[in-house]
Length: 88
Image 1: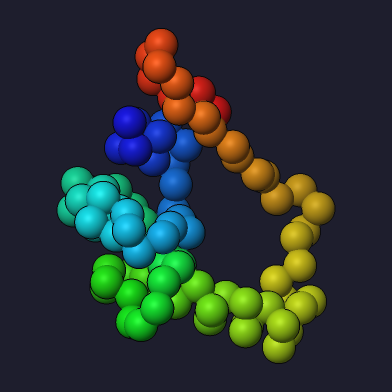
Image 2 (image 1 turned 45 degrees about the vertical axis):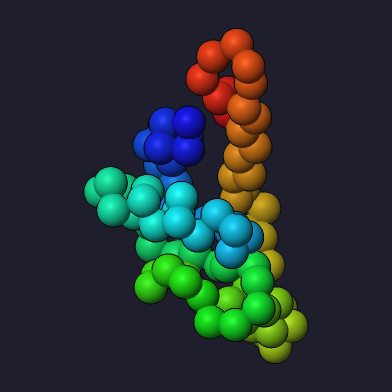
């Protein structure tokens, strides 16, 4: 399901809990073009492409204008279901 979502939505960045680090690593290993990850949890991120989630908050607070939405930035919400593939 995750691979389908990442491929279909052309995901480049992901925020995830450390509990799911292995699943995210498997997606990167499957040839998906993950460029950035923010990992929520204590300590250094497990995945090599990830940064601590706290870094995102710190950077945004230090330079709010650099992280402000452009107004036309897409937000994609996808749900998983019991009747088939996830829908975005």
